[in-house]
Length: 134
Image 1 (cartoon, helix red, strand yellow):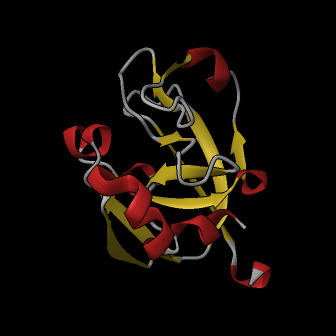
Image 2 (spheres, rainbow, N blue to C red):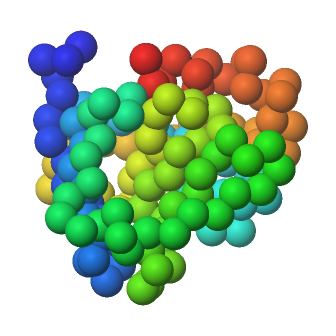
């Protein structure tokens, strides 16, 4: 599968947080109804953390919010407040990329699947989302 990977660039609204990620041009993104994702309208795809790279001084411009189990690390830009990526509870070894924060031109198709974050424990085992960061 690695031969099907391409480089996608992206970041936050103000452009101060920038990153690159290796992923296919056709992705499966997850629309979650947990309390955080539903309020933000987040739809994300997950990659192994080794395929994600923060660029420049982006790390200094991030802050992190956690709640509940404190497993998910919801990162967002200190300047504009956009969560362009984060570490998800479902895949603490991966990175969840907000697909709308990927620069235009490299994603050719996005299939959106539903994740029942309100019923996280039962949904996690049924969804197959854990395999996304392998």
